[in-house]
Every structure is written in C-alpha cells, then in structure tokens.
Length: 309
Image (cartoon, rainbow, N blue to C red; front, top):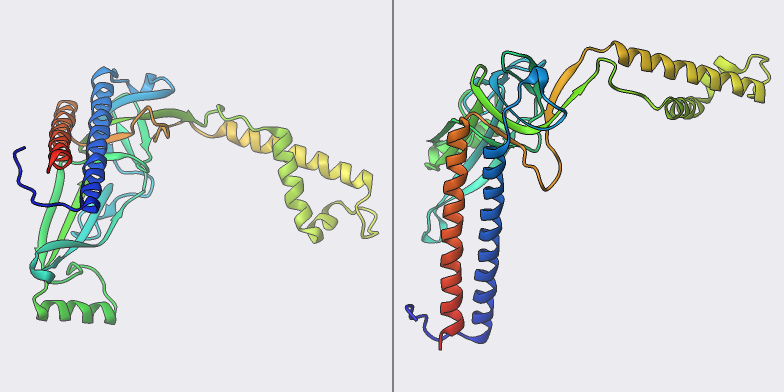
C-alpha cells in the first residue's frame, strides 16, 4: 500500500479500523441527507402565502419583525430578528493552538415573512438556518464591551486583558427586510378552524374546580351543608359545559394566522435561509461533494490499515 504505518498492535489496528469505519458511515449519511435536502429544494414549488396549502411548502419573501419586536444580538448589539452566537477561547496549552468553545446561544423568538400576498409567522425552533450575514472577530476579553457586567465578570475581563488571552466571537444574524427562503410545515390557525373537544374541555374544567374545594363549594353548594350533592354536581357539570362552549366561541372569533414550523419528521427538513434558492442548492451540492470526498479518504485509510503488515 501507499502509507508506511509502521508496526501496529492488534488493539491499535482494531481501534483505527473502527474509527475510520464510523467516520466513513457518518460522512456517507451526511452525503445522502444533504442530497435529500437538495432534491426537496429543487422539486418543491414556491407557494404564495395567501393560497398556500396546509402541509409541507416552500415560501420566499422578506423578513419582518415578530410581535416581540426587534432583538439585540448578544455580542455586537445589532438589531436583528434572529441570532446565533459563539464565544471561543484560544487554548495554546500542550504546545498546540486551538479554539476552545466557551458558550453559545440561539434566539427562539418568532418573526414573520411577507411575500406580498400575506404574512406568515416563522417559528425558528428546530430549523437548519443559513445566513448571509456571519461576522467573526477577536478580542482580549471574554465579554463584548457593550454588555453590562457585574463586578465578578468585570474583574474577569480585566484579568483576561492583562494576561493577553485571546477570544473569538462569531455571530450569525437575520435582519429585518432581508429576503428569506423557507421550507417547512405551513398551517393556518384561528379564524374558526380550531375545534375544541367540548366533553374533554368540560372534564378538564371540573377537574380544575375539584382541586379548589373552597371555590367549588362557594359556587355550587347552594344549600350550604358543606357537601356537593348529586343535583349540585349536575349544576357544576352544566356550568363546565357552558364554559367550554364559550371557549369554543372565543376561538372562532380569533383572526386567522399562518405559521411555518418544523415538520418534526425524518423525511422533511426545516430550512430557513437568507441565501437565495440557487445559492442554497449550490451550498448543499458542495457540502455533499466534500463529505463524499471525506468518505473516500476514510475508505482508503481503512484499507491501508487493514492490509498493513
């Protein structure tokens, strides 16, 4: 073979064979996963929010802030509707320089997409998010300068600055008014579409009332004997059914809202991207190619170790 691996013990050979077999399997899984995403993006037609079917759809439009308004990125302080950040520390111990993860975070606030025909709420939880805006910079403190710090954190910052330690910040952001591509499960709620199970809702109300004995007797112990008779319990049941009916009427009065969320199955991905569709497909194509190349390297190394003498 091409590599001179030198003598390997039986334990080392087995470990390396298992390692490269696992790496190859993982790389191939990633190849097929990203190719599936590529095909779904290519084959799913773009729907309009006003006429989108219920279920798995592709949407394009522009970002607008959600009901909570704009967010502030934790590291840069910039206004955005979604962020993901990472803070890393330079570790040069053992004569090897590498970046060690310290902390990271992702926003879960909902925002909206407008395609000119309607507005759809976006729940970013569980999404594979690709952003055009990614910023990375280095500093000598573990906290950005704009963050309010308590005394202990401030002391840590000064210690880091004086000792010359280096930190790397990375932020990925989605800004308001950016174009966005979205692939996920579309559903319309409210507007009379939601139907309560009236019997179950009434039972839940009765169970809740029974937990507050004082209130239950105050409302339904009409003869004041400190007990709920069969007739009084029947009145409580009728009251619970009436309240369940009122809850249903309130649901009917709610306005319609369109929501895009995670399909929560293994067959359909949930993708949000401020890259356009062509750029996103190109990215998945290159990722698949890179992972396939990595799997071939792992196979070659596996064979080298297997056939080494």
